[in-house]
Length: 366
Image (cartoon, rainbow, N blue to C red):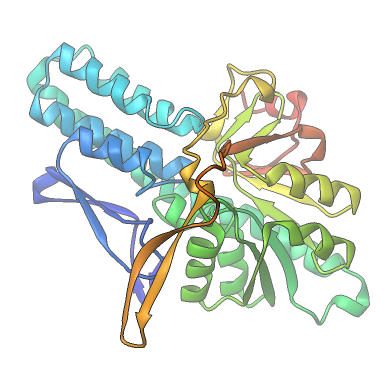
């Protein structure tokens, strides 16, 4: 997608495949910086520290990380150690284990000298598939947004379609296009009048720092709001549809996504506003029948007690820094995700189309 009128993907290889390059998301929107990783431990650190984040992109990055491990040492022991290390970096997003398992299954029975090259081919394939899948999700979602646009009351049809989104499920969370933002990009490029309410998404502010940044670079009208404003906007008739991504979807249609998603679903449910989840099939976990079985990652309390941003020393001197929001005595609890029950989800937008969020609906594709 676009940054300063130039097309970028979030991840690519350099040095004949020996270096993984990603956009450092911890510095956006203030500084555009490329992070280069040369071994799987650097990849593991980048995922844990959220230099890269978003379920699909985490999976692709981990796949390339396993490739780097095999370039360095392709023994059975090295393969298993790197696999487990990378798998442990983020426990909630299922794309991570899905991508790693796909690489592992491809190489485990090969002779060691063949493993690295096969791992690269498979990781490349996963990355390219992600681009195609996300663009297809965009097209499927565009069909839904067009119907909502047309079916609005006559007095609202001259207004932009107002979409509320939570966290960042744009191209920065994937290789390109994104999941929940892909239909928005497709709608904007088709000429539809569209406006996006962007949840700030505390505590890491992915909405404020990443989603708003993406939308600005695409020229899409948007407005940043605090997380708790969404319900008020829905009550006030200012939201036509809620569109979010997912880190894992259970086989019954329960959705695990960024903390605060459940509250948006509750507000949408109460105000009879459609609530859609855009997600690739690779995010579905068929082994889990109840969303509340999904492990919820608890992150550092420092993400709550401190805030990162651009600190201005004077009119000509500023730098990215961190400030403390609370007293030193205050403790924090920081669950990164919550569960939205399937009954509150209008439908799951996938590369195969819109699927009912139910056991019966999902059984059609599994």
